[in-house]
Image 1 (cartoon, rainbow, N blue to C red):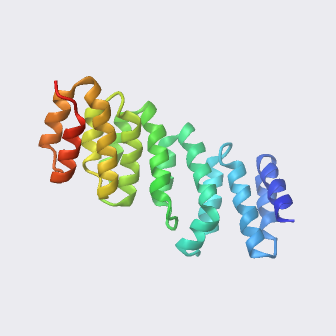
Image 2 (image 1 turned 30 degrees about the horizontal axis):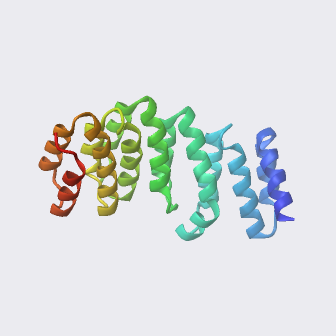
Image 3 (image 1 turned 45 degrees about the vertical axis):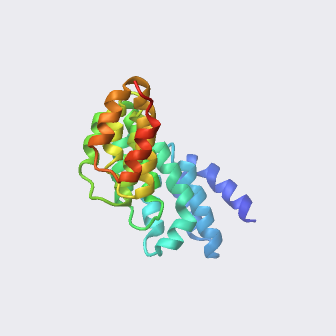
Length: 211
């Protein structure tokens, strides 16, 4: 039964990953095999994220983006969450190289969110290497979410560089909502000086109370 197989494999992953992986590879039904492999990878994601990541990379090799995302998104999320807690730099490097997962921006968001709790400057510096696009937007979202309370000025400066209009508006608004509590005049000046649409600028200014 597929549920029994996945439960077994998940437990097996922590004690003998290699034997479990070899056993899963021998499952004849592809759908059950993929489900079991997803469980195997997820089961080792926190204890040995590097091995789980290698297994995931191998598993999705040759798959279409749609199939890889459908089958292995949950395993990728667990790897990202587990690895980011112990080594966010390695987790970020792994995520950015993933070839065929639609949710890579979300993975990067979660990783940078964890990373920025401890090393916001290092996370910010890493983001300067990104080209505009969905991956960068996701990573910036993670940074802004984490630093907006302690450093709303930097959070806003990053938020307004997000490529996607809806995400730029959402994260800029979050940063301004934090900033207005500590320094509404500075927040207002930043909004006036930022490269924003007239509509977003007016909306943000309207949310900042007068001195």
